[in-house]
Image (cartoon, rainbow, N blue to C red):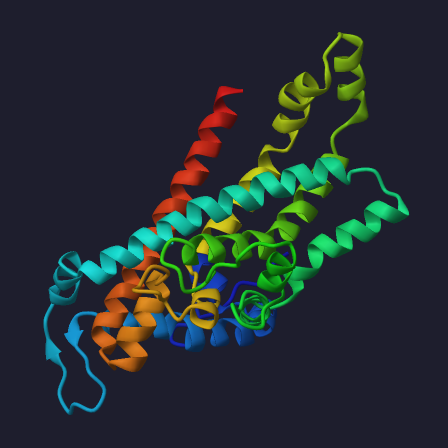
Length: 308
């Protein structure tokens, strides 16, 4: 027999909804610190940046004029912002494709576990551990026209090394190549786990039916890898859209803004020119862009699954 909860005023049994709210769940004590940190360091800054994007918010000024969507309208006519959007989009497409396809090729190549493949896996995965800033510093030194090892090797072979990071035609492709090199190991590890999880019975059945290597890959292996491919694609896309460290360390956005990403332009407006309202508007546009691209990718993946 259950005991009803009495209300303090009348002494009558409280309704079930009231009794449910009056119960205390100790689990809330465990999640409270995390919720507090999320609220203070994530939710509150997001709300504040949205409020700042609606103002002419400049560091040092006593008043911040309300401009509504003025900062967003200014973005529409900002040629430098459009350039950074194009640079970021091109970098994202190339680097995401390179990381996913390169990771898939490495996963298929290194799927058998031997001492040699274990060594190669570690070598390909090692760049993933390092930060983008460290990777940028290392490659900037290697590609230096005067003291870099890459041009030194080319000169030893009788070739003239170009200015990898100062040539307007080579700077962005060079940064893209470093981005692929940095992240292909992560895609390899994720896809390697998926490849090793493909049931051998399916492969054996396809082999008995006369399917060749490429037919087995297309009809058996790739469908089993769809969740892992989706995961690596989304992660690589989101990371690439937030490109900043490599550009800031290797080129500074140059030459002539040919490698300036959205986040690099945001940094210039917000922390060099101190136009925090305008920078907040750029941040919100980037946030909505990442959200839209991620939702489209998930939608396409769900549509493909429904067609199976």
